Amino acid sequence: MFEQFFTTSPEINQDSTTIRRPRKGVIIGAGQVGMACAYSMLIQNTLDEMIIVDVNREKLEGEVMDLVHGLPFVEPSIVRSGTLADGQDADIVIITAGAKQRPGESRLDLVQRNVELFKGLISEVVKCCPSAILLIVTNPVDIMTYVTWRLSGLPSSSVIGSGTVLDTARFRYLLAEKLQIDPRSLHAYIIGEHGDSEVAVWSKVNVAGMQLCDRGLSDSTSEDNKQLEEVFTQVKNAAYEIIQRKGATSYAIGLGVTQIVQAILRNQNRVLTVSSLINGLHGIHDVCLSLPAVVNRQGVTRVLNLSLTPKEEQQLLHSSQVLRETIAKLNL
Image (cartoon, rainbow, N blue to C red; front, side):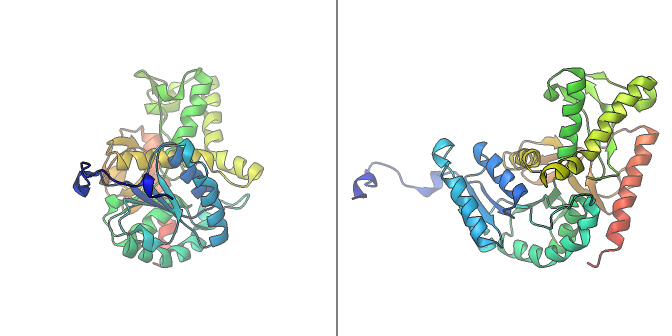
């Protein structure tokens, strides 16, 4: 019955060397964040083959069924449920699996539960997907990125956390809303921990090269300061507000992860505030946190040395110390 659709003309060259190697990725965790990442990457033609892994097989199968029924509406790709063994030649492994953040719980409160999970998981990931870049989304993301680097034995450039990519997007959105411009036309960064000690780099906020406040908030009037501080408070508390209302954040981080994956697989040399190992910059050592970094097919190849105001530098150092103190308590 189907043979007529698959007959091949002898004139057609079937030499496999002419076929581009497919972009293959594995997502570990089919919860709200994992599936938001999967959906965002699917509709943006980010992967040619997507394998989703989860311990809850029934839920996983249902999620994959829901996705594949939409394949006729998007660019051709393969989406399937599987195991880590199916990701042997994967380009990237995205880890979203972990304990769920509870209302009122900080990201750092999650650390001990998730470290124990990663102790068993990371060795399997490295064994099954030896050439993949690892992208960590599980919270607390800076700690889990560091834990993954230590457990994996991979070069630090190949272990990346989603970091403050989402915080930076929130910052740009809220500032752009105040200024009534497109957020893509505004440059601004949140650096440090993805969490309560994160730092707003006010001295680098600019539109078309025009600085909002050259010397940080000390450059602004008291009324402006109040409005700007309110923006940062909204950024810092956004996850708590969303979790209180709907239980989890998912859509925006899914879009952010897609941008990171595209920067890697398309070798874009894009500057993103991902979390990576920092050794030496701003007096910080042996900690994963977010600074603007160049992301390409090799992972994180350069971290930019931002010139910060003394106050911003002090805040960043404090953020690193918060993370270092947590790392020191881990049993790795």
